[in-house]
Amino acid sequence: MTALRQRIESVVTRAWYEGALWLWLLWPLSLITGWVVRWRRYRITPAPLPVPVVVVGGITVGGTGKTPVLLALAKAFEQQGHRVGIVSRGYGGVVGKGPCEVQPTSSAAVVGDEPLLLAQRGNIPVVVGQDRYAAAQRLLETHAPTLILSDDGLQHLKLPRDFEIVVLDESRGLGNGRLLPMGPLREPSERLDSVDWILMRNGRSKDTGFHYRLEHFKHLCSAAPLAIEGIAEQWQGQRVAAVTGLGQPDQFFSVLNSLNLNVRPHTLPDHYALTEQDLAAIQADIIVVTEKDAVKLTGTTDDRIWVLVISAELPEALLHRLGTQFKQAEMAPCSTS
Image: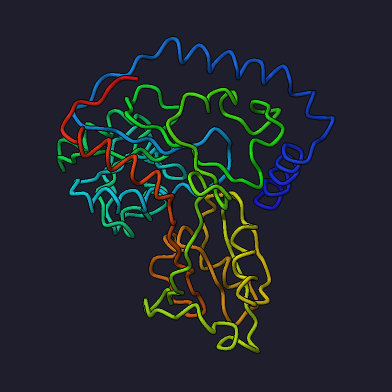
């Protein structure tokens, strides 16, 4: 079933970004998507919250690197003196409507892999639930943050927001520019005109482009770090496999290849619940995974696994804008715009 799902996702994604005539069969369904989007925007009015809310989201399906961006933003706001909290849907988990607070020891199968990574890596309070507004209220009751970050809440209109950031991948852009299911868009491309900032992964513009900084490798069992420099020489002669369940796995494989690691790629569906049984079937001396995959392997005894630790480097222009706006407004009620 996993192989079939992976094949279908691959075919559809390729059609969205490279073109395929059969997509026109889905055009009537895309018209319905557009109608639902417009109806929701007209029908739903957000309720106010007493602290600023910064939404980090996307208008395309699939991964664009929002989690490292959220971690970088949280760090920047904390350096400005804010108490930061994060709300998320908890995609991939089973929390449902929630809200449920994520603990560093929580199970990714329950709360979702990305929220768990945010809680572990950022040491930040995270609350998940389908109702992001209820999650924000729980966060305020239990941790009294002075600023809330929303993970992928662009389309959750019940949640108020003071600043919207859309994250895109520069190489993919908006694909064919069509709404789901004919294309990869959750909302019409005109939605970009109303957001406050657009971030482009691997973008060339100094004001909108962001890039990843490779921090180190971390041994999953022992947590021992291993420097990026000279990794090809250290692992020379060993069979290295790269395993991931990312929305855009080629980004991960390209980074490893840029380090002169001749890796054998193993692609899994996005948010796939990676298990030790999956890893046991891989013939390799070293297995490299992402941080998002690693949170699903808590308690593993497979000592072949190394985690690539990265961070996002955000544009100075964005950090300056946020620092200026929310230094002045950190105790002001959130708008409903």
